[in-house]
Length: 149
Image (cartoon, one colour):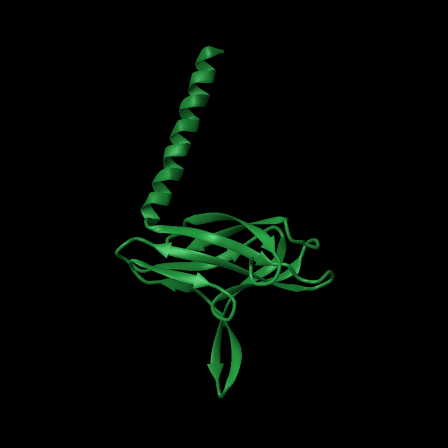
């Protein structure tokens, strides 16, 4: 029995080291200030925001975002076109070396479609960002009213 416990512990340590190594292989990406804007009951779309930091000397990419709280998620960017603000879907987010990309109102943001349940201020949402190197970053974002205050 002790041998099985030791073997199980050794396997868990090895798995933890593998996970740590894959996160370190992506290198340099971290996130802060994640939040989701509260929407009225019955709304089918919400917006999510986060700041992504790239402390590496190489460009990094976010290729997808998932959450069990929503049917689907798209990355969008707001831009001015012919005097009107327009929203455009983005296939990837590119974070240049040694820089920060802010997903914020009026700029890059996450469009969160078909919430599984009504999310009110004080709730939290889990997201997974997929990177261009095949690793993932898990985020816990609080739901807030207005501009995230």
